[in-house]
Figure 1: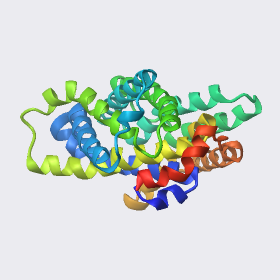
Figure 2: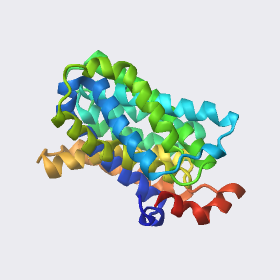
Figure 3: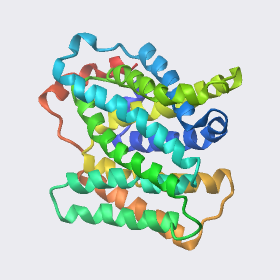
Figure 4: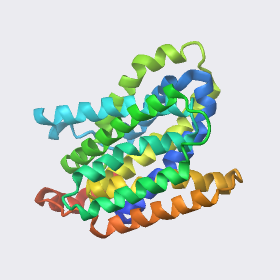
Length: 298
């Protein structure tokens, strides 16, 4: 991470994180075919943990006993979500999996708002996601949907815990504690699944994928959640299926139907509208840390 990351608006960091996630997920499919979803999650998270430990100073002296539940909870959640989502995209299309997983942040957005009027935007985003992914087409893989729903629950938890960690520790230092926990969590299933299938090419591919996911998105999401409300962030996540669709159009020449174009438009509208009141008011502690934060993420 560089000083330029801190200059980005919070919604820009969130969009950049989503783009990185979608690229990382699509490029992970060959690795998944070799070492399985849990093995892929373990390799990526392990590589990512090494990067975060190298880049950020672990805030060991700042740790308090009451920090441990959130830190351990976020680490375990991250590991489980990574496995569940990769298992989902192994069985169902990427766009469908993302749309189902979006139920998590959408629920956070809906439950976090104190205004009934604000619920219009998450609702509009959900309509857009349905039009975008068109779940009524094709056969449904029950296990794939189940894994995606598990990822949705985990993603909702991830958003809330990430915001708590971002408020507690400056810069991306908290990730040097949580991502190693996520790697250990994924290792429980990932090592047995990957055993006998590891090679230099697979490890090298996992190292490259770790930059796209988890390194860039985790850092950008943590910094964005420091400045955004859960409602704004959760609704903005509706852009992720749209990003996947646009990448398919631009890179894979996959044409979008009229309904999908309408869906993308609704998602963009909802995500833009929710940003009007999406910035958080920094606490006294956050304001005091603002001047030194960029030095810790450089």
